[in-house]
Image (cartoon, rainbow, N blue to C red; front, side):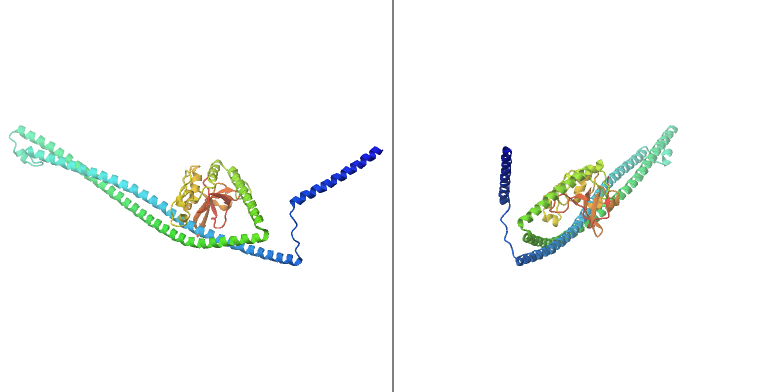
Amino acid sequence: MGAGLVSGRGRRWVATVAAVLLVLALGAEQAGAVPPPPPNPSDDELGTTRAAANARAARVGRLTNQVAQAEARLIALQADVELKMEEANKALVDLRAAQDEAARARAEATAARTAADGASAEIDDAREALDEFAASSYKQGSTVGSLSAYLGATSPRDLLDRAQLLNIVGDSQLDALDDLEVARTDKANKDSAARAALALAADREAAAGRAKVAADAATATARRAQRDQVAQTRVIQAQKTRAERELAAARAQVSGLESQRQRYRDWLAAKQREDAANAASAASGGGGGGSAAVSVRGGVRTVISRALSQLGVQYAWGGGNAFGPTRGIRDGGVADLYGDYAKVGFDCSGLMIYAFAGAGFHLPHYSGYQAQAGPRYPLSQRRPGDMLFWATGGRIHHVALYLGDGQMVEAPYSGSRVRVAPVRYGGIVPYVTRLL
């Protein structure tokens, strides 16, 4: 009994000591983790601070709207520039096609002229043969077709010999005349063919010249538009930069620079995870535009995989072919300002050329022609592997590859890189082009 009582008291003492130690330990832990308490503001101070925070919040909202408006204007300007650049692409493609046709026509005209020259040589040979026959008959003491050859005979035997000779010479002369007539007819035919081929060559040359003029005009128009848009874009970009700085400052006043930076880092990490998940989902067979998933077929999988393999490759206007990224070309405007001619990369239509080459397609380097490269379906019926297009004033200026789940892969614009992004519906055409 006593031992039990002592034992019970001992247990209570141990429990009490343990509780005290636990409280002390928790207090020590909390003292190291929690900063000193901030000053306790008065009601007036709290009211003033809250009013200032509300004013800053309203300012943040207004700046956010300004940034959104600036972004919208930039996108509109970029679309107009892309349109002019793609028109220049189209003119260059048409010019090369016309030049190829003219070259073929000139080759045909040269062949016809060579044949006609050969026919002229045959005529000369036939005329020479005829002259030889006439001279031979004269040396035989006769004139072809004349009675003097018979009257000069000295005996019946001589008369028979002269008659036989005249028959031979006459037959040979007729053969020579026939050959001459055939050669003349052949030459006339080949001369006519040569004239027709040369006329065709002239038509092709004229078409090439018109295409060249159109290409030069389109390029000049694009360059003028680009120079004008560059100035406007710089102004808007400056406004956007100032708005972003003001927005950042307002947010910093509300929540502090460190919390703002952390929120951005959290957002960036989440965005990167989302992009990676979307890309992986699209590559393994993402869903279509509707609620039901659409399986990705083998050819579509190849096209999507090739496009996604170029994520991060820099944009270069005029860059990209069936084998991968290539050096960009000069445009005299925006692309030159970004140094696209010195970069190796893709533009929007170049990325499509590379992606679909994996499935055996050979697309032209112009988004307008790519839109005509296969059957069209309503945008609401889009499936992974379809090409999406954007237009201004009914003229196409941008193309991207649909991945599924509302995502696409594209080479957006100068200064950017190949990326996965949500489908933009502003300016999108109401159909897709499906090659697979």
